[in-house]
Length: 212
View 1 (spheres, one colour):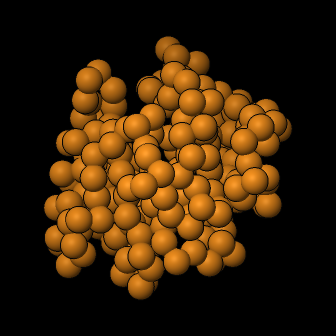
View 2 (cartoon, rainbow, N blue to C red; view 1 turned 135 degrees about the horizontal axis):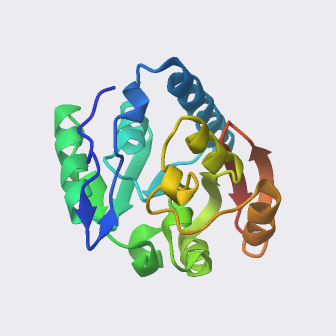
């Protein structure tokens, strides 16, 4: 599924969306890694078996559109109005109603409008100045299950350096403010949720959690 991508655009000084269409990447190594991510996420969504899904930090809408095309009741939000406009365009192209997307910060979620059986928040927490506030906000709206993923460090930075990327920043991807090993991320999340399953698609940590 090909979609419009932000391609490095910034909003309020923050890089939004995806810098390139990683889901349609031709590079065999990137393709292999994305297959691992997609397989792990799809497996955890199936285990949660939700009636409703809300993806926080949905970017250009790839997963929300894909889930809707699979017959799931999914919607998405993102702090960036620019990237939500792209998500709406991508939804129209896929013949999905634009109302499944809205612009909203993770810090401004509310139980009435944003609750769902499954909350998905992948590749978001590492961008937050206050990830614990983000987790508290997710806890407020989660009816049952939560799926979280973050880059696994220091592996993520090491792989960037190995391919000659972000050398001046020691391999740190622009916009990544937080850095967790798998064990440290698990310890953080356990403060807010019960962890049901841990997956490690290279180079991420992905958790299926449950509301307490």
